[in-house]
Amino acid sequence: MEEKDIVAALSALAQETRLRVFRLLVIAGRAGLPAGQIAEELAITPNTLSFHLTHLKNAGLVLVRREGRSLIYSAEYGRMRAVVGYLTENCCSRDPCCT
Image (cartoon, rainbow, N blue to C red; front, side):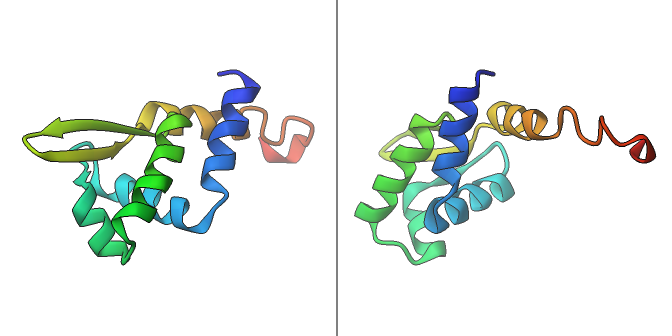
């Protein structure tokens, strides 16, 4: 993953509502949640939720699929793992006590 992608993902998560949405989607698992349920569980208006989901989608952190009339959102676990991996890749590499 390129640094610009890491910055985009971290930037998207550096906002309270988006972080709450993303954490809820991580908890929901691969099945994801419909937008209406996300809005209800987090007490977010649909317009506000749409704005935040767009940010998360553009950062590659969420996937969206249509099921009938509903939009189902889920966490993009590959991207999440890549961001965490980038942050921890060289953890303690200069500290011999951390092996």
